[in-house]
Length: 311
Image 1 (cartoon, rainbow, N blue to C red):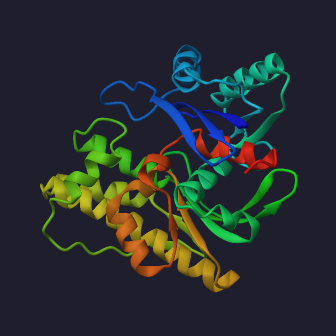
Image 2: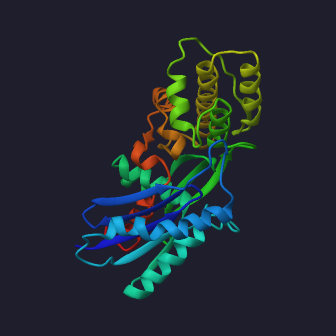
Image 3: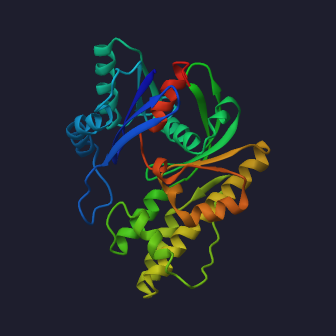
C-alpha cells in the first residue's frame, strides 16, 4: 500500500503525518515551548526548537513503518501568495527535501493554509469538496482570513483571500485576553473553559469594513472590563462571543457577495465549542474535528497523496 509523508513546522507546532492510499492516517505533533506570561515566540527561537524536535516527532510516525513513503509533502510557506514567507517553515521544507532525495521520491510543496483546509475536509469526510468551489475560513493564532477555494491541477487547490482581519487575528486576541487574565499561552482552551462558567448575557456588535473585520478594539474593551472588576468568566465570554459574531457577519457578507456555496471552518480557533455552536446554528458548514483544528501535518500528507493520484 502506498503511503505519503507530510511535514509542517509552524510557529507553534512541530508535526509529521503519514497518509496511506486507503485514507488511513497517523500523525504526531508537539507544541513549541513558550515561557509563562509571554504571548508568542520569536522566529529564531521557533526555528531552533523545530530543528531539535523534528527528528523525535518524525520517529514517532515512521516507527514500525514497513515501507518507505512514495512521496513527501511539506508546508513551505504560510499562504498561497507571492512573497508569503516565514522562517520556521524552512525547517520542515529542508528536512522534507532531504528525505525525498534520500528515498528518490517526489517532494511536493504546499502552503500551511492549504494544509489546514485539507485537514478540515479530511476530518469531516468531505474531501469531495476539493473538486468544486467553496468558501473556507482559516482562523488561528497567525491568521483570520476567508478564502475562495477552487480546484487546481498544479497544486490540488488554489486559494484567494476575499476577507480578513485588519488588525489582530482571532487567535492573537484570544491569547492576549487569556494571558491578561492570568492564563498560560496558548490560552484558547482555558479561556473557553472560563467562558463556559459565565451565566450572564453579553452583548457584542462586531465592526466590519466590507467583509473585513477589526478585532484590536476588543482587547481594549476586555482590559476595561477587567479594570471595572467584572468577572473573569464574563470577560472571557465577551471575547469569544465577539469573535463568533465577527465570523458570522463576515460569512454572511461573503455569501451575499459570491452566492451560496459550501463553507468550511478550519484552524485552531475553530476547535472552540462556543464559536462552533454559534456558526453551526447559522450555516450548513463543514467543521474541522478538534484533533485536526490546531496546526498539523495531516492536511499536507493528504494533499501529497491526492497530488500523487493515490487518494
